Length: 328
View (tube, rainbow, N blue to C red):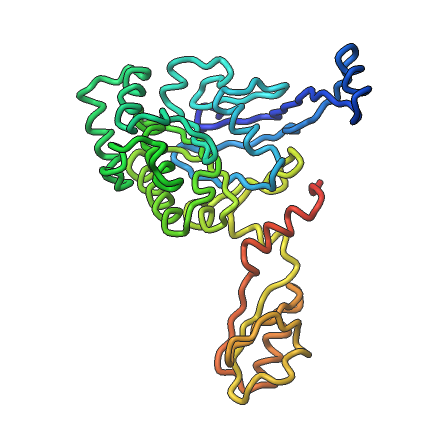
C-alpha cells in the first residue's frame, strides 16, 4: 500500500513554459509586445516507491530531470500532473508537519548565513523549527561530532573552504532530525577525502535514525558506497529501476576477462579485445554471450596462472544506459 512507503511517486510530470525568441535587437523588441513560449517537459510521467530507511541513487546526465524531481518531492515546485507523496504528505502543500520531517541538501547552494558562524545559523534554524533547547543541543553536538566540525562552526561561513562549508551545511540541514533526506550532489567539487567523509556520515545517519535517502551524484563512488538500488532517469523518463548490480546485467553487452599466463601474454588478441596491460596481467573485453566459451578456451589453450571474469566498471555501464533510448 502507498502508506507503506516513505516516498510514493505515480505518473509525476513537470512541464515548464519557456520564453523563446530569435537573436537580434528587432526580435528582442518584438518579444516585448508578443512573447512566444514553448513547453519543455522536464519530467515525463515517472513512477517509483521508496521504502522507509532505503538509500536510493537517482542517476542521470545533466538536464535529465533529477533536480526538478527532488524539488517537487520537497515541495519547492508544483507538479504539472501525477501524484507525489512523502511520508503520507502532499509536498506542494508545504505543511509544517511535512517540512519538519524532510530536508533538501543541494551541493551547489548555500543555506547558512554567509557572514555569521554556523553556530548562529543553527540557532536560527532551531527557532524556525521550534525545537526545544534541551532537544536541540544533543542533536547539534552529535552531528558536529559525526562530521568533525567542532572548530569550523565558530568561524564565519565565508572563511571556510568548499568542503568545510558543505559539512557545516549538512549539519544545519539535519538539526531537526528529518526522516527523509533529498541529497542533490552533496559531494560536488569536493576532494576524495572529503567525499568519503560525507558518504560515511550519510551511511551512519541512515543507520542511527532509519532515515530514507534519495541521492543524486555524478560520483559513482558515492552511489556504490551507499546505494543498493538505483533509479536512472534520462530525458525525464525512467530508464532503469532496480539493484545497482542489475545495471550491468541489463545494459552491458560485454564482460571483462582478466588473465595472467605463465609464459607471457602474447597472442591474447585472438580471444578478445585487449583493453589493458599491467605487467603480466591482461584485461580483455569479450561479448557477454561469448564469455563462458572464451574463458574455457583460454584455460584449455594457455598455461593460466590466474583468471577473473567481471562486469565492466559501473561508470562505463552508466554511459551505456544514457546512450540508449528508453526501453519499451
